[in-house]
Amino acid sequence: MDKTNGCFAANYAEARAGFLAGAKHRGLEVVTDLNPLKGAQGEELATDTVLLGAKEAPALLVVTSGTHGVEGFCGSGCQRALLDDDDLVKRFEAAGVAVLLVHAVNPHGFSHLRRVNEDNVDMNRNFRDFADSRELNPAYAQVHDLLLPAEWPPTDANRAGIFGAIGKMGMPAFQSAVSAGQGSHKDGLFYCGSEATWSNRTIRSLLKKHGAGRKRIGWIDIHTGLGPRGHGEKIFAGANDAAELARAKAFWGADIMSYYEGKSASAEVQGSMVMSIYAECPQAEVTGMGLEFGTVPFEAVLGALRGDHWLAIHREAPPATRDAIRRAMRDAFYIDADDWKGMVLGQSRTAVLQGVLGLAER
Image (cartoon, rainbow, N blue to C red; front, side, top):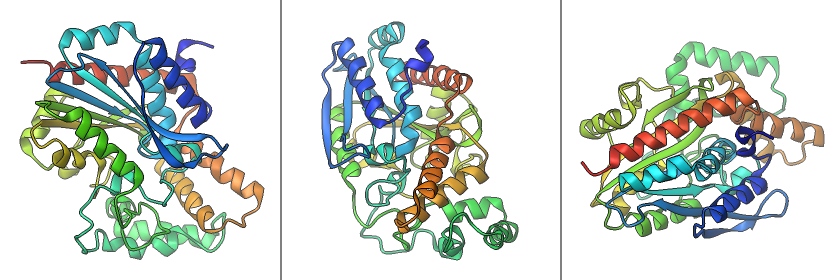
C-alpha cells in the first residue's frame, strides 16, 4: 500500500487507530474526549486532539476533521498525512506556531456514515444563540416534504417536484432553502438543534484550553461534498468583516470565496462552528476557512442526504435499502480513488503551510 492510500481508512475505527498511531510515532500526547454513545461496530467514539509545533506560541492554527461525520474520511486522511510529514512539522517549529489537530469533531456521524450527529443535528449549524426564537430559514418548510418523501427510492413524481421547486426558486435560492440551516423540522436536513450538542461543548472546551492567551488563531475546517471532483474550494469562515476576509486572502490567496459576497459553492450558513471562537477566545485575531473538496455532482449529494434522513425515520427499511443508502452516503462524501486522494493531500498540505506562515510573527 503506498503512502497516499495509507493515510485513508475504511471506517471510523480504522481512522481513529491510524491517527492515534501517527501521534504515538511522533511522541505526542493525545487528549481524548469520549462520546457517551457507541459506534456502528460497537466501538468507542471520541474526539482526539494533539498539539504540535511551538506549543506555547502566541499563534495557533486549528485543523478540524469530521465536523460533518462521514466527511471525516477525507479530513482524517489529511491529518494523518500531516502527522507523518517530518518536513512540514519542522516548518511549524521554525515558524513559531502551534498546530492543534482535532480528529473527528462528530465521531458518531463518522462511524454511522451520517453527516449529522447522534441527535440528527448538523454540527455546522449548531453554534448559534438558542435564546433567539426567530426561525432561521422559513424557506425550508417549502421543501421539507419534497426532500423526505413517503417512500424510497423517490418516485418519478417526487423527482419532478424537486426539479419544479428548483425551476421556481432558482438553484441558489433552492440550495439556500435546503442547506442554510433550519430549526423547524427535527427530522429534516441541516437541522440546527435546540441546544448545544456534545460536540459543540467539546469544541468550545478545546478552544478555551488551547486558545487561551493566543494573539492570533487560524482555523481550517476540512469538508467534502461541494464543487468539482478533487478541487478544494477555500471558503471564508468567520464574521462578515472586511479585515478578516482580507487577512484570509493574504493567508490562502485571492481565490478564497465568501458566501457573504455570493461567491461560494456553499450557501450562507447559520450557526457555523468557527463562530464559537469569538466567544471562547475574544482576545485573538481570528482567520478561518473551510476547505471543501468536491466529490460528485450536487444532485447525487442531495440524493444521498435525502436517503440518509429518510432511513433515520424509516428504521423498518429492508437491509438492501439500508445498505444502498449507506453506500450512497459514503460515496457522496469520500472518493476512494488514488487521484482524488492525491489531490486532497496536496491541497490540504499547502493550505496548512500557508496558514502557519500567515500566522507567524510579523
